[in-house]
Image (cartoon, rainbow, N blue to C red; front, side, top):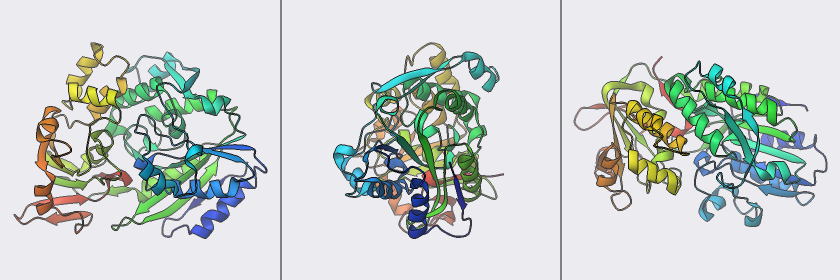
Length: 422
């Protein structure tokens, strides 16, 4: 197919340009009868994927039956409110499919143990089953469009591309083991890097198991203003790896913020509509940790937090084991404490600072109590008290000094980037 690579480092892609590019894509697939669109879930609300999904739905219907399956992975299903915000009234609810990572998958094969050992340099020895939502295999679709945002990511280094498939609509083993592989090999070595251990696993699975699917990737790179306005800076599509490589290069330029020195205190804000659990709220930990001084503090303003895990199983494991450090979690993991919940072990490793800095969650005590936050190894602050010192409505990204003369660095939206000191 004729692929597209549009990068606008100093400009934005307009709505008219976006629609024109999508027209050029769809012209290459005339008269499809049944189409599956796979956008991310609402935790990627700054991806422009919702807008693109709406455009695709309008242009493809009524000539084709179009289903939309958000790539929720292990995350919560989209609420009615989130569906409305993401897809407006364009996509009918009966054409929005829910992916259940525990029950809805079929097995395509395995990434062999020797391949995983080579990728991990001997640190992780296991085969990895490749599972996908069965609709991709037996749903009768003659075109599958995976829509996703390319942005720094704590597990795969840079999302999206095949991660949208193998994790977003994948099964337990791939989700569990790719996350553990990343945790064992070292998250900070992977953050913002294109070719990481988890990515190499996905590449192997893509090469060996997805060739027969009518799969096309539509990838975006975006930036977000202080007011929350999303700008589309890159658009790429195709059925090869090159669109991802081009998108990753732009994301590394636009979405990685190079801070001149390490900071004693970082304050970050977790949008209550987007981030409702520490499972996804810990993007505030992952994306800022590389600029925090040893002995420093990270304060997360988290008014929307209502749980630890995105599902009951992961929530229970987080409450049971807590964010108490790599060595503690690996010991439990090696003793078999996590059973089939390996991804929980990986998440708990990644959500700890290993004592390097303190992590404080400022929550609404009617939604998440001090006792609950403390029980998993974090410090706690009342969100109402935190707002008196740090008002996310008035603070801008960057260095500030508070009323006590203490310097801090504020991050308004940690999910949209990566902050690091070179």
